[in-house]
Image 1: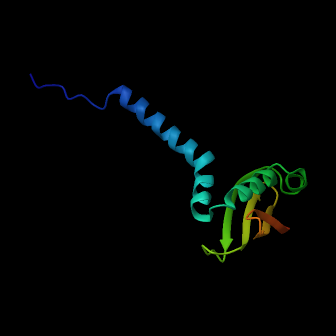
Image 2: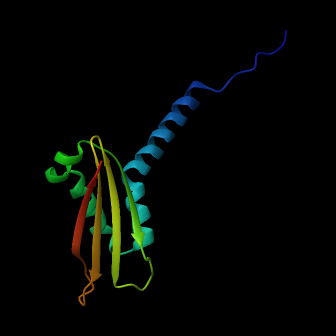
Image 3: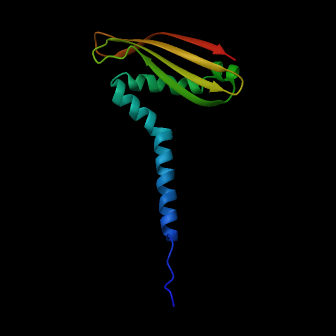
Length: 122
């Protein structure tokens, strides 16, 4: 009688599902912040705070609706810069918002948002 080959065990599927969920959770919640911190260094915390406050801002959400996705872009990135222009995009149900931040590093060493501009588009 030929031996029966066993397939992948059931606990293996459970383990793969848990690993996939953990990976998704990391990328969704911690991945973007970790990536920004690695690339930008000090101003990453200020940018993350600005992005999270923009996502829940009534002024923005009333115009664009529920936010589906966000994207960000750094302009003129350099390791020894004392100023930074950062842009992030929020895609909503009804419209999109582009928020542009001009940041500078003060003499005290703290980063500060000097100016911000919000552009809404359909």
